[in-house]
Image 1: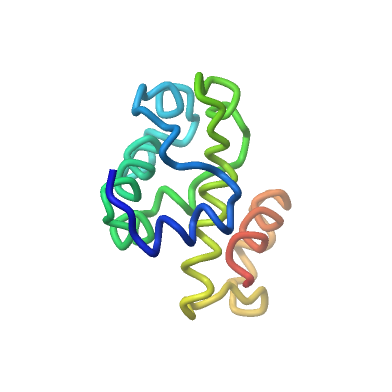
Image 2: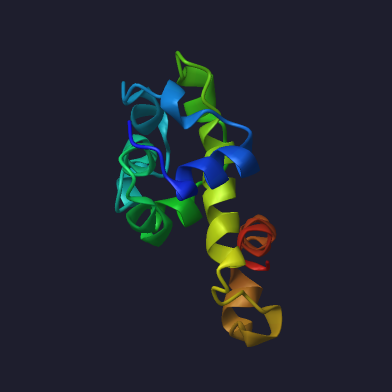
Length: 127
């Protein structure tokens, strides 16, 4: 496994040891959002392990994670993938990515969408 500044930073923010993941794929198999993801959850970890954090940070997968913990409960190595996904989102936001502002959302969406979607979205995108 390659060591990189991004890997060190991710481990520091998340408290997780990314090297523990041995790519069994159980997290991706149990993920309810995997079908919508551009990169499977276990592949996000692999990108970081291989020293390609830019690709992991650019993936839509880190924003789709619902933190349902299905992956964490299946992981034979005890890797807390939702915690890693949250840490990756934090890394993106710390780089100055645009944030979600409630007043910018169309009123039609606000009226129709479930409130939990907004709570989750604002936690992820409000910096």
